[in-house]
Image 1 (cartoon, rainbow, N blue to C red):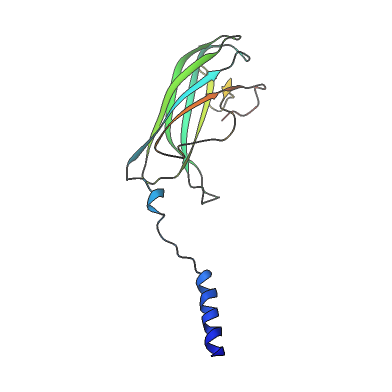
Image 2: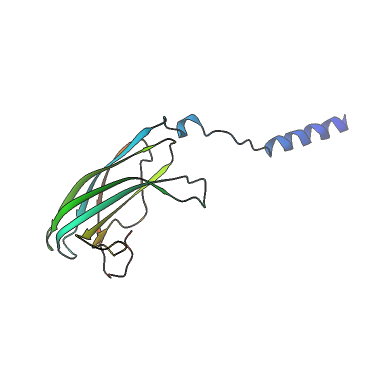
Length: 158
């Protein structure tokens, strides 16, 4: 009887230590070719530099939060040219950024306002500060955010 108790205890202990790798739960998956979309309103604040002919570049990225060393992948990009902003005024920029994905993952959005004709890798004038997660509760979301001015030209913005 004592031996049977030990065997039962070991089986219960072993059952708690088993990990089975399989497909993610159904709620975590999107249909193949699923579309995701962020409708955004970004506000340029009254403090900050003037923009004569600016270009807003917004990028939508997907990443797998379960893989710490995996890179994020750009799945959508929106470019909004012809931005005019004067100090002392608020300027609202409305745009949509959409992408297609095969598997539901986690998403974030970046937005930067560059001067027209800025070389690749240059610093922007305004940027969406912080890690802005989006689409946590579905395939479409509305976002309202204020862009922060870049204080130092050498400061990275995106």
